[in-house]
Length: 149
Image 1 (cartoon, rainbow, N blue to C red):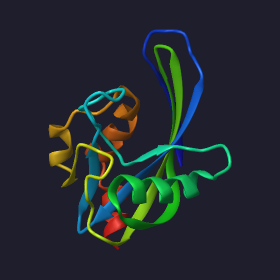
Image 2 (image 1 turned 30 degrees about the vertical axis):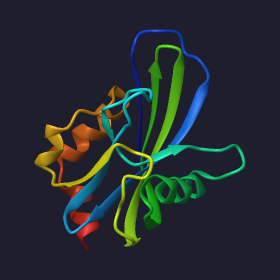
Image 3 (image 1 turned 30 degrees about the horizontal axis):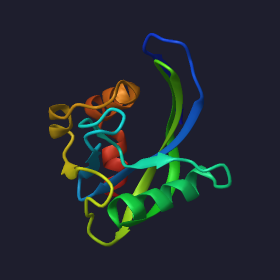
């Protein structure tokens, strides 16, 4: 697992803990688009959401993927941990490799979703907090190949 810190200008505010899933299926990765009107609305992201105080990151990810997309996954290992500072807030993100189990995704609590290839990933705009992870996903085949096994 890799860790990192990225920052935009501004004072760190309250810490928000987020679990996000790298859900691979048939050589493609599931991404979702944030709803217009939400923080960072219109940008693409890896599905997941804020962790409640009484749940683990893995439990949060199971819950969020059902609520957001209606899918069930097996949460496997944590691949990356990133702390990012936005103006007025700081975000602690944990990205987990997930194996899709059942139900086709539906945009229940997101604007849209897409299954993308490694080459297609560069065509989407993501929040600054995901930049470090995107570099790894676009420049290396290791996670893509591991997911295909």
